[in-house]
Image (cartoon, rainbow, N blue to C red; front, side):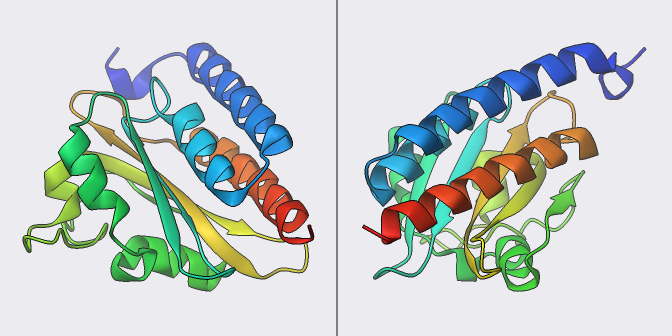
Length: 180
């Protein structure tokens, strides 16, 4: 049995644990920066090697980046990028629908680094998924992107479903924080 055919029980357990951590972040966030950073941190690790949490509106678009074992220099460079420069992420936000790319074949789907190289190559993306952050009124206000690298299994549809729940909770938190 290869990694792509691994038993579903560990996948479910990991996804439920990640959902619980992200839910706690959404409930406790006291500001959008807290929400972005906390959500990225809750998903980075066994669930995803790289996480980008992008929020739009309420001023300039902002991105938080977390990595399982990433370079601080690379993380800072990724923080400066905008979701509109990443075709996969901007399509998910524009359509307000989740997207998955497994395997990542187009190295430009996650955008371009300041040095002109593809983001997917810089982070070693093997697979990626995007959950748009949508508020209760149906407007998109950002996205959560997870990336897997190396020999880790591709992001699967079950994990995409959990990512969508996390993005939904994040949307509820954004609405709460913006009403203050």
